[in-house]
Length: 125
Image (cartoon, rainbow, N blue to C red; front, side, top):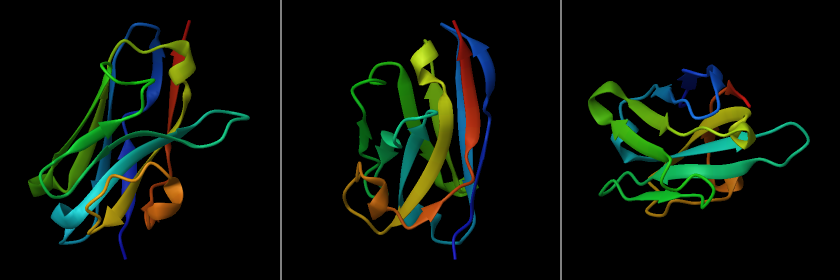
C-alpha cells in the first residue's frame, strides 16, 4: 500500500508562488510515475503535471506550462510542484497521485492507483 501526503498549500496573491510537496511511503517510490491534479469548486478534476519514474520525463497541462515545475527527490520519497506566477484560476484543491511502474505520464486520473488527501491552494486576485 502506498500513502501520499501533500503539504504546502495556502493563500497567496496573484503573481505569487507556492511549492507543494507530496511525501510517499514505500521503498519503491523511484518506480512510481507521479502526477499532480487539481479540482476547483464545481469543476471536474484536471491534470496539472506529471513526472515519469524512468528518465524523469515531465508533462504539463497547457494552462500551467511555463509557470509550474514538477520535480522529484527519490532519496526523500517526495515529489514537488513549484508554482510561479499564480493566477486566480489556479485556485483549487491539489492532489498528488502515484502510478507505479508506468512508462507513460497519464493525464487521466483513472490511471493512477494511489491518491493523497489534497491540499488547498487559494489565489486572491
